[in-house]
Length: 258
Image (tube, rainbow, N blue to C red; front, side, top):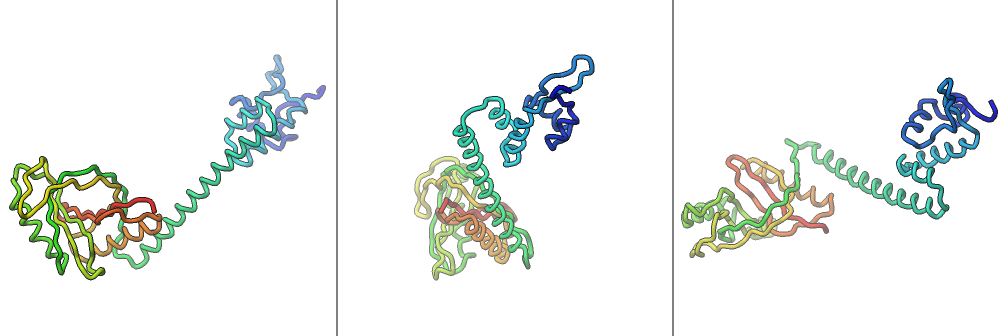
């Protein structure tokens, strides 16, 4: 056939399928050397085997077809190919790091589910700064913060109150001293009172999860968020927050990269 091969013959020589060659033709990656005007057969020449080999080799190491096409259609120096492959290497290394990180997180989540009464799902939220009125105190038991919340609401003008309310925890029982700060969000600034101060609750990136109002559920949620931070290499960036949502508690840990 004068050094020309039909698509089936060329496919067999190149170690690919005829379907693959048709696809490469359609996307402009490897056109046939000519097309028989009478039969419409695609015809290839032996020199194109090297081009096909380059396509397959680059594709096999993970180079996207768009970049393969650029290299094949614009033959350049080995230095250019080296730079393209170096960039690919960097992307692959980043993908491996991402996959390894995801594997650690999945493994950790599996461990948490062993013997757990419920699954605690931790999500990341970004919250803006909020104007609050608050009162900080040292207490012997966590439940003792409730009267401070009640007194806070009683002292503030009703028309100034927003919906958000909760507690900031600075120290926990394990530290030997509980320090909490009951707070209520404000719609507008009010005069500072004897019971409370007015300030901004700063904006923060928060690891958040929900719990019931009972101690066991809250403890489980606190432990889950602590482990979530540890596995991801984050560190606490401020007092832990509890936000009251009727019969639900949202526990929030402000965090930053370690």
